[in-house]
Image 1: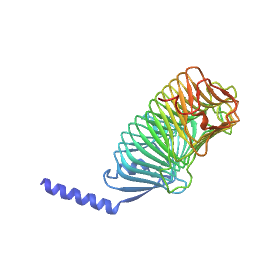
Image 2: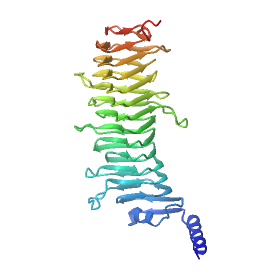
Image 3: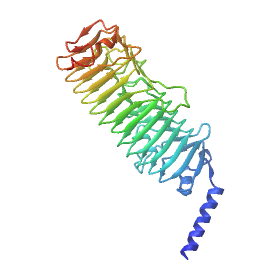
Image 4: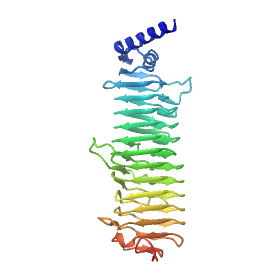
Length: 382
């Protein structure tokens, strides 16, 4: 009897897979995306082609190999009411190999975030997706996600893309931006998670990237199929406070993708500026950091933190180019081309408890306030 039931189940599953592997949903004709998903077996690969405007909270829970393919103009909108207290307009939980492509997802200010991916989901891909509204994309609960050609327009909430709870996120050719208003926002928030990114622009955020709680961000050319490599933090509105903050035991590692930070910080200086590394954190910049025209500081390394520079460029900064303070260190290794720190209000600064090593490898630094400035990497060794 059990064998017969098993054979029937296998037959039906195989029949559904062959006959219904692709399903069309026309929300403009009154069809429901959630209703369609409820009819699809979760462990059989399926593609859902979405047409029109779906005004509903969409939940993808426990699916294995699912594709949501948006037709031109397809979008998901948050309803005006939220009786189930949903946190996301589009929620992906406990799923594997889910791809969402070609959709625009829009939220009101009343919800936490536009898209949420959690529950240990793996191999989730958002590609050619646009979000408008609150918090953009939130990845949580040790989930693994790819964002390719994702545009996050942040109109409320704090961050356009967030990685929490040891989650791992790859970002390729993205745009994270906000309107020029009085809100305080971050482009990328990484709190205990890990993000690898390339070819991305972050525009007009008060904090371009915020890394905390032992989080890490790597800039590396990990996808050779695309031409755009560098990550740019651009601030044409002049409202930025920090291009990048690296705090609380976190790290920023620049490799084969450059980080370009323009017009960061505020004219009064203090700890605003292009890059603020603090509270036991590290910056590994190599030759991949380019800071230009910062209104505040260039690179600040403070509170038992460390920075490594070799071939980077920090120019045109209103206050300090490289500042090292409060039991912190920075070393500048030999590189070709050399590290350029020049044309700043003060090119090099360190307090009495901190040190900059490798001064011989710094080009054109003319204004120096640092008694603990070593010509080489070390003091005299035995």
